[in-house]
Image 1: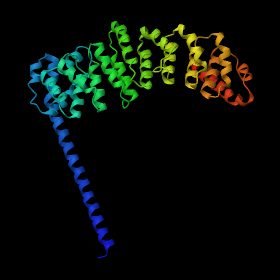
Image 2 (image 1 turned 90 degrees about the vertical axis):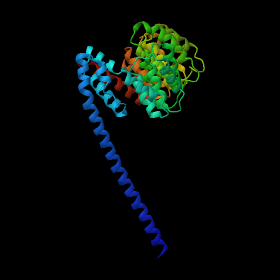
Image 3 (image 1 turned 60 degrees about the horizontal axis):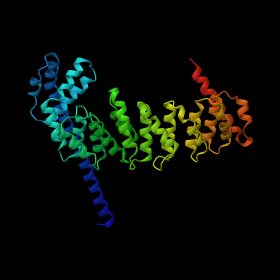
Image 4 (image 1 turned 180 degrees about the vertical axis):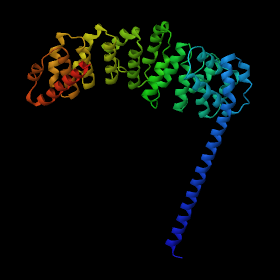
Amino acid sequence: MDISIYLLVIVSLILLGLTLLLFLSAVFIRLRHRKWATEIDRYRKKMLPHVLNFLEEGNEKEVEEQFTGAKLEYYAFEKIVTEMLSQVEGNDADKLKKLLFLDPIYDHHYKLLTSKDDVDRVKACNYFSNVQLENSKVIKKLKGYLNSPNQMLVFSAATALMGSEDVHLRVEALCSVAKKNAISNMALIELFHKFHSDEEDQNEIEGEALKIVLENQDITPENRALFIKGITEIGYYNLVDYLLEHLKEPAKDWDHPEILVANIKAQSEFNNIKSIKVMRKYLDHESPEVVSAAVSELSDYGSEEDLPYFKYLLEHSDNKVKKAAVYALLKNNVKETEIVHEVPEGDMESITKYVMMYMNENRDRKRP
């Protein structure tokens, strides 16, 4: 037999074998999923009447007696409770939440928390993020996972720790996550909002504790800027002057365009008039993002003293700055014709475009 034909036969047989293997794997996965779904449905049907009965009579013992130790049993039970929680409120919701504290449920998740499998650990963290953290052993385990190379586990453990009443423990968790480059901005800002307690009297102590996070030198500039945005969103007013001091004379860790932009916007969000003079010094900053942010925020105060600066910036080399300057002038009632006459012929087209953009946007805002 020719060697090429021989090789072709071998390759064909290999491909046939791989195809068969893939087919059998797909069949196996489908059968396993069907079995899993059937088991979940069986446990749901078994547990649901007892959960409903608990809402009527409040008999925890009856619910506890239904558990035999099967993992899917706990999954099905929690799914019932969480789905019902999304549909009820008031006393019924408070009653349902108590079911998550039952000894079998708690003990099961503590075992998962001490597992060597990261998937089980994450599941346990998600559970403990929904219950009040009081057990010192649980807290110690969660703190230990903050140093895990598994970023999902780090985030899940930190989220669970945000349920603690200890502000400094929450700050420790927030700080650990902020040092991780692999955590997304969305996840980090979500964690920041979880750090905030609904208790109004905690705002001041939380603000003070956040300084520990912001001053940490291992936190990336992007994450520090993200936290400054979070500070304005939540409203930590006791940090306004602290942030202003870092804007006046920024240290190396704070002298980053993204941080400066966030800080400038924070001063505006807090309506801090004391920041006006400080913002003016950033009108000649080397970063166009910083300059345009300073222009935009200064325009809100409507000071005629700033108009010459805005006019000068119409000739800036960066289009973002030009646009910010045009918007600032128009917002402060400078005529369109006056703006156009201020610029050289080479900038006429871009400036005219920004004037038209502002007028169109302003017209849209005025529409009912």
